[in-house]
Length: 232
Image (tube, rainbow, N blue to C red; front, side, top):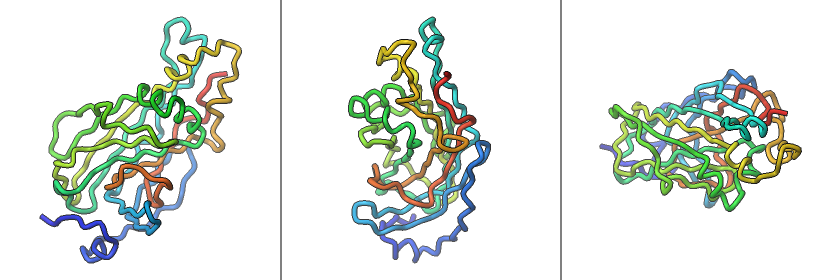
């Protein structure tokens, strides 16, 4: 099996097919597929390892304080991501699914140094040839970088070019808002504003990097169904 060498020139020497970038879409029911990309940005040197896409539109259930106060569980976003590997990934390659949250979610993502966000996440993955989804453990979920959720996949996993890895997750942001105990009269849009466009935008990619200071270009983009996280 070919081993992945994390240098731009080495990737080019593998003779990868270069996919053309699709135009950016902003409608809630659309998704943008990631394309292979390399950058040279110091600590952000990266190679996108997959061609991925989100199932869109993503389910968005707006938060309602009153309903949660009587036992409901509002305030969540549910998404799934399909990753097709661009190259052979052997046991020497670190593998991460990096998720960029919408900018509107960045404020709650840094509460309690990201620990509140981690508690609100339920996520799992299915490797190629796998039959069942495997739950990510808390240790495999990194929320310490504002606006990002970074998931560690098994380094030992063998993923060949063209094979598919699936990731699905739920962010129960209503739990975070409930825990603040701000009461029914608080304007929760101060914490999660309405989307600046017609939907909230998520980005995702499979890489060999555990996180990014600046999220790489050429990543998949998915959109929620709706632009309001708070039920006013």
